[in-house]
Length: 407
Image (tube, rainbow, N blue to C red; front, top):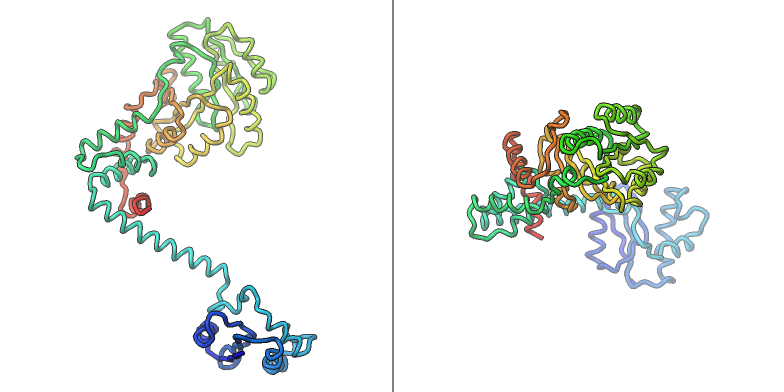
């Protein structure tokens, strides 16, 4: 058995000295603060009998200096020696190097990891810029438009290594247009039963009114019916009743939202039925029940998700996920005139594989409504980015695409 007692100005220095003398298998027997700093007693290749006598004396001295010491209080030096000889699973916070806690050390390790990842990302991005300058320039332009990182990298990854910038731009725009699904003007051509769902304030009722007027201008009033199932917003049903009187079409009001499927079954004689539903917060406890009602009658109606283009991409992504239980077959994009960037909204629709039916860019009824056309929307996103002066700095590009290149 070999026992070492070492005094040092701090715990870090003492542990380093113990490790150098006894190796990694050394067992810390005791530690205490002294006028010179910290005193640590450690051993290697010990047996319990010899260890008891070896550590009894320093433990007794510690008790004399601090009678309330938890190590000796109420026990003999021999008993304390046996307790101290059992190697613990981990050091206490006081015994960690520098007095740091495990949580603090964990944060420092995470910070170090982030720093290393940033350095690797910077090196990878610089190498990518040197090897493929056209590709990196296209990544910059797609980022300025607002296209999601994974989608932009996927598009650029399909380009030939020898392509020039003009051809690359055309390919990227064409690729986005192909990925963006649209339905065309099929509602106004063939009719249907459409329930508009979405968060509060996205413009569901306004879009419904625009479609209703467009239908009447093309087909007349005989085959159109409106359903006012929004019993949550004050005055919503009165607003629908006023719209019906203005247009000269019937407005049906279900007793409860759960009675909507039965009401839809009684409206089979109408070619076009437009259904206004309650606007909901994404955290609304009743939203799930409403979506389940719509999902149960999916064979009799189509659910259309209404999204506001002025909403941030993260919030749009959350809305798509939250309303997914209703199985929306299409969507409408409103408030196009209020959006500072359009790439985020297009990225969400492409990722969700959700076909876009119509876009709305104002309050005028029915003028500010048009069928969605993919190439026109992508081109509009490019023009909007140029008009607003959107720019992506090198640090943003390194963080977005450097890690992908490094991975």
